[in-house]
Length: 407
Image 1 (spheres, rainbow, N blue to C red):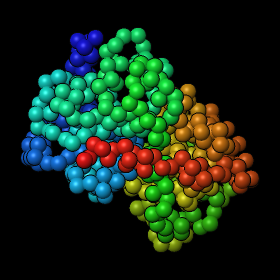
Image 2: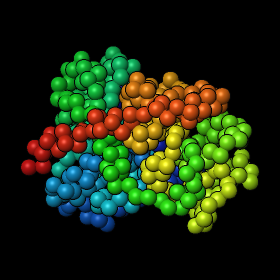
Image 3: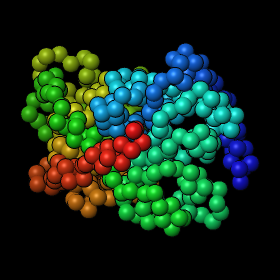
Image 4: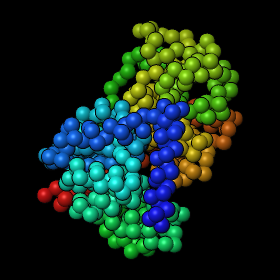
């Protein structure tokens, strides 16, 4: 199985290199990986007191932020972030408490050996799902404690299939801080006992954003006290399904669309879809606007924009890659999203639906129906702020459990 795994990594690396000629994201990853070893040597990271946190993409980095802030506040360590997705590079480089960052190299044995020849962190923290065989194996061989935080396990994952290879990846991890009891019980079934249930750090993160949020005057001017629907982290697949209901909406309802990917192609698509009815955030004057649809063409604003909505539509749901619903729910507004069986992997989505805060939809007509229902009955979908508060506190538990590794 080890041979098959390494072969798979080699095949993946080959296709990444080929695809980098045609795809910008693949090119960024490929070129970023090529810079990693030079970056480590230039920054002399082997002589730094490091806590190394590895994330896959932006969502996992959001989960890592409360951990990063807590470590920087209480301990004298530099924070190193590694990541896989190219979308993570910008947010990581802009975050004040991150000292160093780079693209994770290929999980080939030789690459990981070279990496650990240059890095000697105090601890390696893996956020959620990042269980790379050779990364974990080499950390263990170098006597570096490995901690998995905010991980979630389901019985259909490969770690619980017959065979020992993938189980042994998990068995090399020093401590699991999981989100729920189901994950704890699944790990116990494969004889992993170093597990604690701590919840999800995203609740702490969105609560922090909520408490520090500032007013955005230009958006207040735009909505002008009208009912407003926030369409956050939208993909083309989302807009294609709900666009007709937006176009046919003859009320004075305002719409704010924040694309997941803010680039010229995405902005042009939105402007051409809602012809003569849009204005971009960068074009907002300091006066009321007759346009119904605001397109946000700036990163980092979405979590604060949700406060101006009566309803939030969260993008990615129809693709089975639903984005952060908690960012909207904390503002005590109902959250609507596309229905897809893959969304069931998100624990918070199930809890939001059970609490009457989350509403999955199948098509544009259901979007119209739930929108009209909520706007007529303002009590529908309430309770998000209380829900977030009740589920926060993971970072306090993490602090206690991490302390012994920082002595």
